[in-house]
Image 1: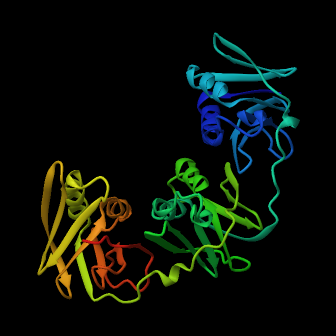
Image 2: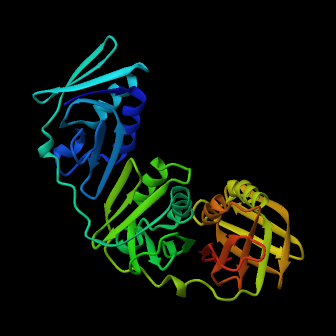
Image 3: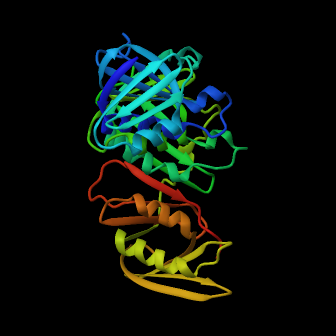
Length: 374
């Protein structure tokens, strides 16, 4: 293999794929990145970088001048460190036996690689269904749900995000048993058949990290055991989480007798300040709504208490309810409308927190939060 290209392009490629490389992989070869240049399945004047931790496979293809085709694997962290430190000039990479030679101006490095055929084969997805959506929409849905994923490994089905495709609609849902986040959007291409799967959170975090904010199209492929998210130059493939996701629709309250509408910024800022004086064990924060005023209080036996008041629009009876302050702040961080709505039926019943959209016909996003006992 013999190629040359800009430092910025090569650095972009290795940074896109390096994050999933484990410090203690099940196979030593998984410490390496597979580099392939100019092969038929890569493309003319293309370099493809692939990493894997068995569960997740990430690929990035970059434009490069290919003088000799070929492939090799290189230690990921070392290769990234070298490329990152090179000057902003043209970089030459070639292989000799199992050595990788990197040249850039007066810099010369030789690192030990391993043959490309030692790298695990990439699984082929036996496609069940597929669709496409914009990358910015996908990333927004992930951000609005991933914080509610459970970290309890004994509840395996809750350690990922539910993804459902039906007709021209995509849904993402996450829950840890104390709260539930739900997001839905329309997709331009209807899937071949309805399907629901559970996607590992790590994969979704990688999508947020490396997929562009612009509306580049993402092709979503779902198979029996795997899911793949594909851009023109980046793809992420992952095994699915096994198990059955709970019936989330039963958790979402159908009616609410009390509705609190407040400025998202004012509500978030006030809760964040009062959180400085909430008990670290309970994380309890109290919300008392009366007339057109919301009083937010927190206290801790060792330090004191904090209280703030904000203006609201209250529909229904006055109410006082307790919440986990972290849960409140998690959802308020992802609400991007000027106002937020909190719907309640009683101090002990699940609450709905959602963006306020005037005359909205459908719920595109909401979070259900279980209250704390006062």
